[in-house]
Image (tube, rainbow, N blue to C red):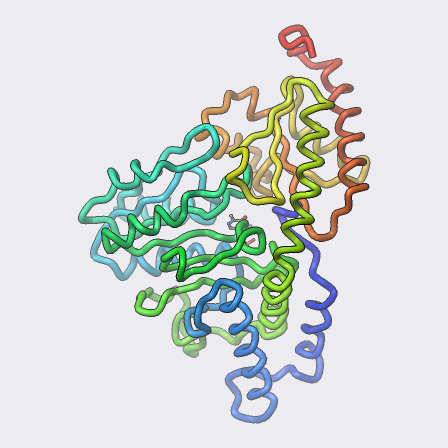
Length: 382
Ligand SMILES: *Cc1c(COP(=O)(O)O)cnc(C)c1O
């Protein structure tokens, strides 16, 4: 129940990758047959990645994942622009916020747009922040903690009107909603393979034709000079297959996610008192649910669920290690108590309805156990 953190590699993806560890091990830059075959495999994968978001192959920069794609977009644009101002939101993934912090140290001004209680950015606030100095707008497509989908087309239109490059971190949105880069009017878009049943350590940055970025990694000139280094062929091939599968089965997958999350939400809200669903009621990715169980700690819930072999999360897998309160929930105006009692459950293609029922049954039990000893017991009368 933690598919927003990662997903298993699809069997068909594994099959597609194996030859590239064995007989087809050539360096894609080599002139001989082994090299040419590896190069061809990358071209095919690039086409599959591009097709998933309606881009051209030559607009796909292959990276090591969502984090590198975000870093490349931010530094790549900022380092070749005259402007010294970036606009982002207060609920971004750390792979956006940390590069922004570094730019800030280097003298760039960063505006962090606020969000409402659902985690939505108001496009009017974006308009008000734009200045002559603004060189980049980066706002995520769907939030990784609460699942809220931003008014991305409206944001893109504002950026376009003001001739400012617009980047979106679409890592959580890919495969969960149709993404058409032409229709949105976005200039740069980040994707990660391991969130869509592909291997870890590979991803892509869509860079619209005509947008110039400054490379971060220099060397042999691979990826048209934008990211040097011998390509991770097997991973790229796997990522390509994961994109093809995600595109071909998107309608079925979304129906599956909706069936599971609808059941999960309705059972939890109806059967466990003093519980709320966080994020937007309908502007959300179909596989995400995020709850607050008043009077208990989300971390205690994770440990208890883990004892029953159920994997859950309080939010971002990346910030759990440093044990800080969610900046996303803070930005949404949540109290310390609400933040503490939060739990994220995200489904994937691997999950079944039986697993949903088991999760709710276990959750009911452990929430009740924890509430009996909760210091808030008398406050809520659970
Ligand atoms: C997972 C995630 C990332 C990081 O992607 P990696 O491929 O793990 O580096 C970035 N942004 C969001 C919204 C994510 O969910």
